[in-house]
Length: 323
Picture 1 (tube, rainbow, N blue to C red):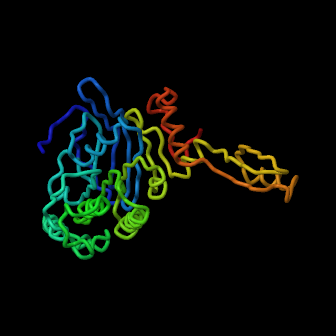
Picture 2: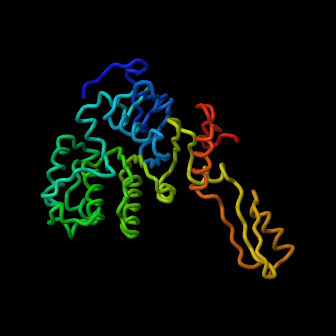
Picture 3: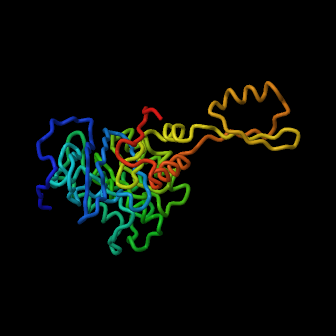
């Protein structure tokens, strides 16, 4: 890709910070007269799992393509593994892994042959710290494809092809892995195995993972930190628990007494329950306490943004900020 100098795009080298994998400041993108990204800020550190959430058209794909080096930005300062992605060379690209939502696979290749072939491209970029590529037999076992290693790709089931997608994305032992709807087509058992793989990559291999998904339950299970992108802006950032508590902090408490059902919303569920049992004791039956989920928080934040309640970058809610 030919690097193009654009107004507002910083070209001054930055002193390296080995722990910072993604550094994005005031990222902007314009197509013609239409602004798609309005000053996105993002930082990710080594071994961190980040979920980028947002409705269709929010700018997620554009953001990811810029970070991957496939699209030039209009303005802003972006460093991926210490390099401007618009100028990244093959050595830099070998440090990235991408698992696309779908890809045009090579149906006539056998699984083991395909992974060995792709892995060979990473061998020149092996280091003492990160030997590349991932040994094929170990990789097959990791993604659960050992029994299908001799099959042609076009003979795999949908779920098996998705496992192969993951294997292709990590065959080079990436330091930064982009995952786009990674568990589409997985059954519950395969989904759980994939979640264990993500935790293994982040915790043991120190891989930084940027996940885009519409599966909020998956994001809640996997992500250390969640960013919500809407209208081309990051409108909220924090851990799943922090976002859930901050945006919709009250707990919903349900119980029955003397055959009658009650529902109450309380900011301090513990204090309310203490008083409830003090008054009614064993008369309280079928007790349920439900806290707001990430889905509740996401819907509330996106609705507020789309209805004009969070216009401008100053409205971004971050973990630890005041309401």
